Length: 329
Ligand code: ADP
Ligand code: MG
Image (cartoon, helix red, strand yellow):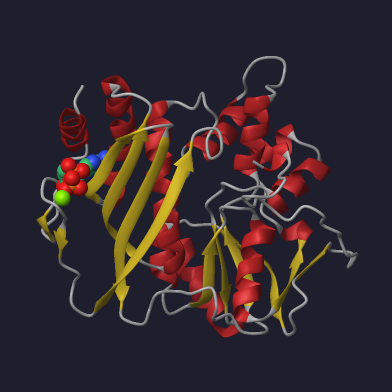
C-alpha cells in the first residue's frame, strides 16, 4: 500500500473536526488558531516497540496509549488538549495494522476532542512519536518548579497498578484469569489521562507532574525543580483492591513507589487551598489522596511509614539509558 493510501486510512478513522483547524492534514503544514488569552502548551512522546509496550500488545491499545501518554503531560500542565501530529515509522505498509492503530487512537481522541492535524509516515522499526498541542489561559499552566515548603502532596487514583499489570503479563499467575488481573493489565494498556483533574487544579495546585516513571522519580522532579525536599508516608499511598488481592506488601510497595505507567497526577497544594481542591474534585467523583508534605532543603524524598520508621528505597524508577530491572517496566 503506498504512503498516501496509508495516510488516507489514518484520516478516515481519525476524523474529528474542530473549528480552530484552518488547515489540517494534506498541506505542508497545519494552520491552527490558539484562542485569545491563551498560551500554546506542547508535548512530544515516543513509543518504541519492546521498550514502551510489550511486542505482543494489541494494536488498538498501542494507538490508545500513544495518545494517552501525551494527553497525560497536558493534564499535568492543566492544559486543554486540541490537536495532535503523528510521526509513524512502520516496518511495512500494513493496512490492517494502521486501521487497528487508528481505531484505538480515535477512540481516545473522541473522548477529548483531539483533531489529528498532520504527521509523517516512514519505513523502519516500529516507532510512534506523537506531539500533542493544547492551550491554557495565559500564565496559568501548572509547572513542576513552583511548589512551596509546607505544601501538601497529593496523588490521584491508585498507584502501582500498571507495573503490576506488566509483571502479570510477563509471568501470568496459574489458574483462571481473574477480574483483578484484567484490571491491572488494563491500567497498563489503556491509561486514562487526568485531563479534567489538571484543568480543575489550575489556580489551586502549586506544582504538578504526571506519574509516568514512578512516584519517587516523578515527585523527585518536582523536588529538584522547586529546590525542595519531600516527606511521604508509604502507608498512605493509595492502593487498588486488585493490587492488594494479587501481590504481597513488599511488591505492592515497590510498584507504588517505583512502578511507572500509571499516568496518575502527583501535585502539591498550599494547605489553605486543600479543602476547596478536595471538594471540587470529589464533586467530579475523582479520588485524591494526601501522601505527604514538601519540605525545605534539597535532600530529596524521605519515605516513612506511619510508625515514623524511615524506608530505604534503592530503586527509584524507570530511566532510559540505565540498567533498569525487568520489574520496573
Ligand atoms: P511533506 O512531504 O510535505 O512533509 P507528507 O507527504 O509527508 O508531506 O504528508 C502529506 C500530509 O499528510 C501532510 O499534511 C502531513 O502532515 C500528513 N501526514 C503524513 N503522515 C501522517 C500521519 N502518520 N498522520 C497524520 N498525518 C500525516
Ligand atoms: Mg512539504
